[in-house]
Amino acid sequence: DQQVKQNSPSLSVQEGRISILNCDYTNSMFDYFLWYKKYPAEGPTFLISISSIKDKNEDGRFTVFLNKSAKHLSLHIVPSQPGDSAVYFCAASARGDQFYFGTGTSLTVIP
Amino acid sequence: SQTIHQWPATLVQPVGSPLSLECTVEGTSNPNLYWYRQAAGRGLQLLFYSVGIGQISSEVPQNLSASRPQDRQFILSSKKLLLSDSGFYLCAWSVDSTYEQYFGPGTRLTVT
Image 1 (cartoon, rainbow over the protein chains, first blue to last red):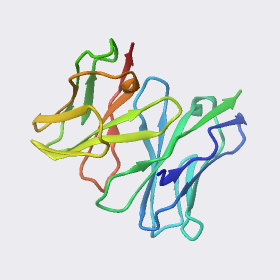
Image 2 (cartoon, chains in turn green, blue; image 1 turned 90 degrees about the vertical axis):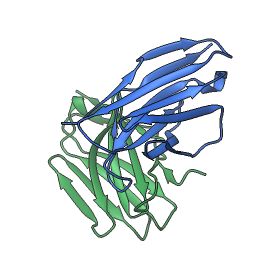
Image 3 (cartoon, helix red, strand yellow; image 1 turned 135 degrees about the vertical axis):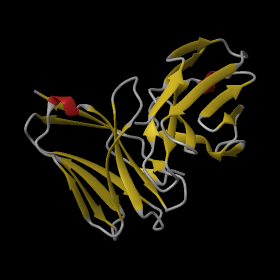
Image 4 (cartoon, chains in turn purple, green; image 1 turned 180 degrees about the vertical axis):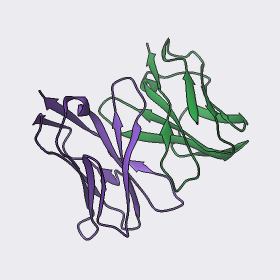
């Protein structure tokens, strides 16, 4: 049973525009969420996180929004750059438990 | 600073052969260690995690096993590989289970 879902397997965005990657979860006990970025043949790298006590966390061009009532989070990248082209995974956990990963969204930023 | 190593980077093995993938972490003590598998078109599936030497928890029943003979060493093994074992295997570490994980470079395993 997939507790964390990324329903868009791929996304294409023009350079300079906003990229919005979405993630939905089913477990209301999840209280910590992360986004990872993964290039081909490499391990994922941590990008940004958010705790359930917040609804927004920003780090440079990356902003994560959390809507607890909708069990939905999104990652915004503004402005998008070609180097952002990668697979993005969201992950969620209930503190003290394992992380559950989504299936990933492949982002392509077109120059 | 902390670093995580995995080897080999790629591996092609016939069905029925054994497997041993190794992961080591430097620059930290008593990390939580994890083995994940990323199969084609799927997310990251947690296979095993360890909170200390000799302590292994299995998340998915399969023909794989894991061992942690030393504090910063985590080994993934199989006695007989199946075709379905093909995938990208990732080792990760974290300070504890509540914090973000840091991943190694991964091993691409192809079972033929």
